[in-house]
Every structure is written in structure tokens, then in C-alpha cells.
Length: 280
Ligand code: PAF
Image 1 (tube, helix red, strand yellow):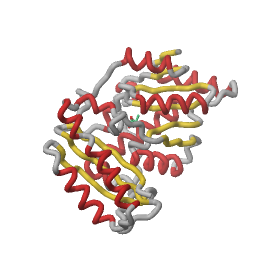
Image 2: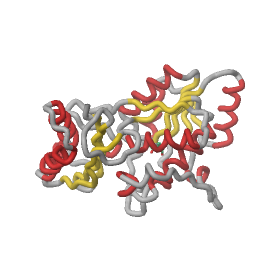
Image 3: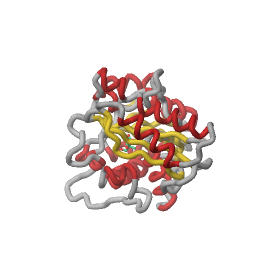
Image 4: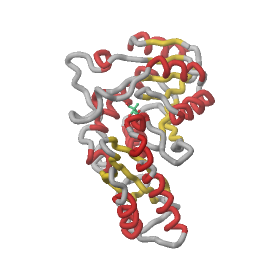
């Protein structure tokens, strides 16, 4: 497995691979890999001749009050996981290489980024789309793999890829959960044992919503009212947003249909967790 930190070297290598007729599958990450990332790497291994993983904690997608400096990092462990997953090349750029002095170009997807995480974290998606666009350009990816846990991120990246005619196939893969239902996230390490228990309320809320729909409830408000009560019963949980939206437009829905997705962001203590799932 090759490890490259230099951007030009990464791009030259990618161009050489393409000239040699090899396809490139790409998994962009911020590191601190878990089984969710592993599922992306395994699928990437199947889809590309060369499997590239990037590890870059992107400062541009963190707000001033967010956890950039404390974001969990463990490069040695990540590299061991990457090696085991059959990654060919790990790219670990520095913030100075991605955003050198004088950097002035940003990618902004309008509309889809106004709601949900976009409303709670102003500027977050501008940082995500900018870095993902740059990563795609350097890595020359044919296919890029993302987790559906970041449901809005996936929708925004799909939109950007279409709008900017980027020649990359975007693949979204299902949420990977712990045995007790908690969606895997690098941020789960922030949770104390007691908070970890209360964090289960997110996957429980999803299960309750799905059951209500199975039992014939079609009113989004009725479901949301029940879920709000459930989540508020947990002393350390604070709802950031709880919405039932159309899976493509991300607009709120009044009645449940096959496009309905429940989207949640809940603080448990100081840790902001997200989860989602289809209702039908
Ligand atoms: O989902 C993530 O880990 C990040 O948002 C991404 C896509 C790697 C961009 O920094």
C-alpha cells in the first residue's frame, strides 16, 4: 500500500493509472475509520482497479464553535485498517496543501443546503463540496463511495456532480450500525457510557416511526410528535432537527409516501449525532 501526502504526486500517479487503463475507486474520509468506512472500502475494492482512500480532516467544513481541534485522529490505526481492506493508495494531504495562502475558490450547492444540517451548521456544506470537488480532481476518481448516514451530504454531492459535469459515479451505501442499533460514527467516541445508552434513542425513534407507518399512520406530524416525546424523555438528549422529508428534494412532507425519509440530528451531551432511514 502506497502512502502519498503530496498533492501533485497524488495527481500524477492518478493520471498515470488512468493512462494505463486502470479505473479508480475512491473513498474520501476524515479518518478515524470504523466499520461504516470499511463497507465503503470493500465495495470500492470490487468496483475499481485501483482503490484510493483519502484521510483529511477538512477545516473548511467545521464551524468556529465546532470540534475541529478535538476531532478524533489515529493515523496508525487507520493505515492498518486500510491495508487489511486492500487499499492500494492512501492520500493524506495537509490543510496547507489543500488551502494554500491566497486560496479563494468555493463550490456552493444552493437550495439543498438551506435546510437540516445546512441550517444548523452554516457554511458546512460549502466546505464539504469544495473539498470533495478538489479531491475528485486530484484523485481522478471514476467512482466515489459515501455513506447514507450523511444523507444530506450524499444528496448535495450528487447534485454537485451533476451540475458540474464531474465524470464520477456517486455510490451511496447503507448505514452500518453497532449491534444495539447506534449508527457508526467517528464522533461516537465522545460519548460517556451513560450518554452512549441515551444515544440509542435515535435508532429507537427510527424503529418507532417505521412501526407507526406499518400500522397505518400517514401523518408526518403525528409521527414527529411521538418521536419528540420519546427523545425529550432522555435527560441528555436535545433535538437539533427532526424532520420527515422527500428523499430527493429534502423538503418537509405532510403525508408519508415511498419517498419519505426521517432525518434526525440530536445532541447527546455535547455530541451531535445524526441518523436517518426510509419509512416505507
Ligand atoms: O463524510 C466525510 O467524512 C466528509 O464530509 C468528507 C466527505 C470526507 C469530506 O471531508
